[in-house]
Length: 379
Image 1 (cartoon, one colour):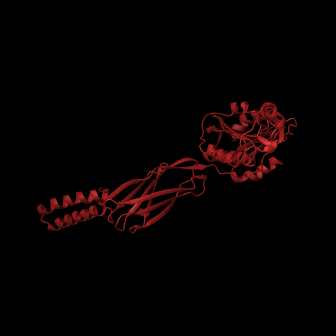
Image 2 (tube, one colour; image 1 turned 180 degrees about the horizontal axis):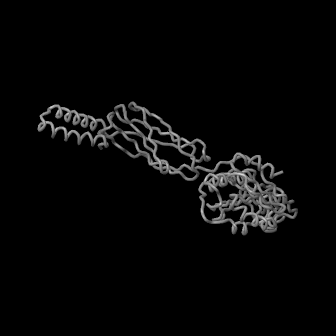
Image 3 (cartoon, one colour; image 1 turned 45 degrees about the vertical axis):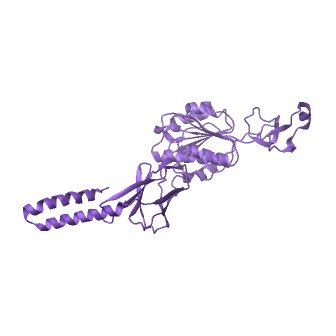
């Protein structure tokens, strides 16, 4: 197909040829013929159908916000001639990136890489990928689509923080429900044997009485749970960057607890976002869920009120929301949680509200301040 420059050259050739003889300038006809010859050569350059094997890979598919992610394009020339003038066009969300591909000899593969934007958190669609072959003069081009679109998941940034202790002594009688995480500390109940159970936990007397192999269910009643409540109200933050800081801070606290093997619950104004028992894979789940959180108009008053007590409560919000609404919520929640931390993401120094005993208020302007600030709260 003709490019805008090619269409302009074709129109100019017609005008020059039509004006050459009435004006008595045969030179104009020569210029018109030169333009037609150039267009013909350009069409011959791009007309042959290229035989290409194209594969694009994105590494990594999940990346913290602001860190590097690249797309690697592998192009194999399956034709009989060297290919030149190729250009790859890839779309990332609402933007498009063009990359020049060096010449590819016959039966060889050329790889090119280009960075992907990771400044915005969320699911970023990548593709579709188009390969454009143009002539050296830019008069014609041939565009073909290759492969399928992919998705790059940009997750919150995290920093290493210590786990917030709950401050509650373990229940020596064991848990009162089946929601406690499995462990090796306290006998809770008997259940039927499943493949993979430790034979040392078999209760032989009950097995003989029931005729079914029974094992002891042991739990760890002392694991401190952490409930992280993220305020997603758009008006609670002075800027969009402070909202991202709040998401990063909530992710850091939740991932620290889950990575240490403790149960974690993450709640927003829209309801429960994630509830995990703790472990490295659960930390990955929390990051995946927080990657798609967006501001809205749902507050956290109901979320805090309905949050199940026990362990530690961490409420992450902006300074305006905390000064006007968060401290009364935390005061009421203090009676149900062992300790309460209000993490305020502020643009600068903010007035400190009066807090009741057992409620800690921490101010944060950037995520890099969180480790030092958080260590003071965990002492």
